[in-house]
Amino acid sequence: MNPVYSVIVPCYNEEACISETHRRLSEVMRGMNESYEILYINDGSRDKTALMLDDLAASDPAVRVIHFARNAGHQIAVSAGLDYASGKAVVIIDADLQDPPEVIPQMAEKWKAGAQVVYGKRGVRHGESKFKLLTAKWYYRVLRKLAGNAFPEDTGDFRLADRQVVDVVKNMPEHARYLRGMFAWAGFKQEALVYERDKRFAGETHYPLKKMLKLAAHGVMSFSEKPLLWPLWLGLVLLGIGAVVLLKVIVFGLLGYSQAASVVPMLLLLGFGAVLAALGVIGAYLARVYEEVKGRPLYVVARTLGFDKPTLPTGTRMKS
Image (cartoon, rainbow, N blue to C red; front, side):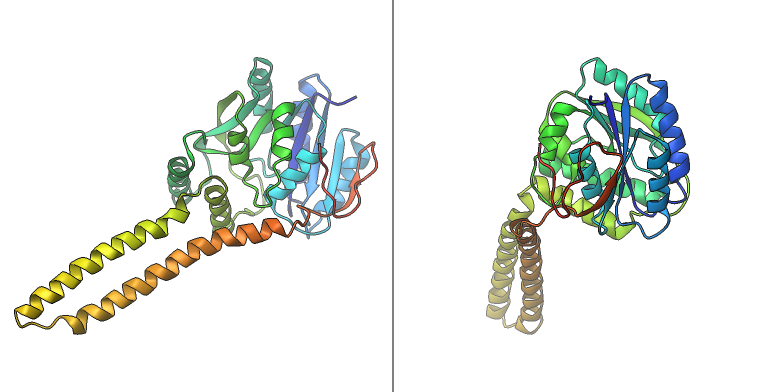
């Protein structure tokens, strides 16, 4: 019989957090007095995370463990959890305890009242730099402008989703996953739950600036084609600038002043820079097309623990 709740916890080098994460998660889930399972996805960790998860699976019948054969990334690890989860409602939460498990019962109440997605909206964010807070604020506002106002601001992947919504999201075939956007795109009745985000319990963040920028790019390119039109507008602007400069050169030439020596190099640099920028935008979209048409699986499973049904063959992905 399928549980009421499935909790998905992606893990990458989280040996400093796993024990406390499981203690708090288990305490919260037991307190809800309904059946549950906790799915830990080991995303190719290189520390003791794998051994600790194996120990949890051996001591707690509610634990399921999925070990990847290689690191695939946070969004792919969560996608694997969605594939394997069997609950009527699915909770996504990170292992670092920035998103408090104690909020889950409030999400469940909203779900039982009719909401099909309850996403965590960060009110107060402890332990985050002003730079990160500012860039996150502006990123979500830019994304809403580019992709539409259906994307909630100041949210992450922490959420509870109904089985119907989970089945829609898990069947979206794209490899460049931006799950918070995919859940928003799916529609259904969605509500926010404002909460205080804590500091990371222990260890270091696994989302440095480079990964944050990559995820941000996935969000924009997955849900908006508007950047592909930027080269057109840039070209029109440069065409206008070129016409004005040409008129200036002609007028000054008629007056006996030569402007070509200074103007021509400037126009060449401006033009070449614009062309390269345009090619970069188009190339980024083509790279995504290339990644999709290769048709490789999202992830490779090395082994699983705690599941009643047989494990999947290496390199396959579950379908609903």
